[in-house]
Amino acid sequence: DMNQPLGEAVGNALEVKEAIATLHGNGPADFREHCLTVSAHMLVLGEKAKDLTEAHSMAEESIKTGKAWDKFVQLVKAQKGDVSYIEHPAKLPSASIQEEIRAEKDGYLSMVSAQLVGEASVLLGAGREKKGDPIDLGVGITVHHKVGNAVKKDDSLFTVFANSLSCLEAAKIKLQNSTCISSEKCDELPLFYGVI
Image 1: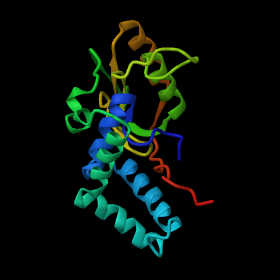
Image 2 (image 1 turned 180 degrees about the vertical axis):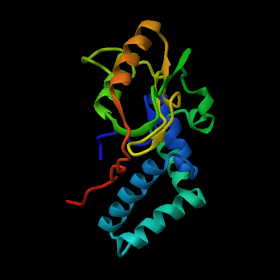
Image 3 (image 1 turned 135 degrees about the horizontal axis):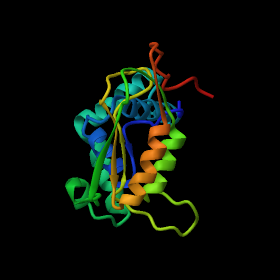
Image 4 (image 1 turned 180 degrees about the horizontal axis):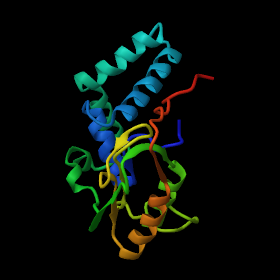
């Protein structure tokens, strides 16, 4: 379901760090499960596993044993990438300004609009509004809660990473409009609806 961001990271360096964490057996639960499920389907299609259960176990095992990480390092090297950046993610670009967007009341998160979060990241410079626009690899957003989560007033909903105060302010307006907090408990969104 892409009605809310997958995982927690939105932005180039932040997403690379999230991928690195996931390949080391950590990372957000929804992102990790998405990766394992897609990998399982690929293993079945590639006739490396007889069914999705076996394939899911194989994918989990490749993370646990470090084989998945080793393959990622191999892919970076094959593309002439500098592996020191993935081995030491602190070397990746980072933003100079960091600010929290907090919940304005107690309740249940009933919406986290992936579109508005994406648009906020573009305003920060993490993506392009038009072809040729520069990309700032260090900016982005961390999403701290998902639809269905209980939140308290002043809980951090987002951490915004910016390199410009004007970009930060524009992104904050988008992010404040991207969520809805309801007094009624609502269901979590499914990760998958089905397979086509």
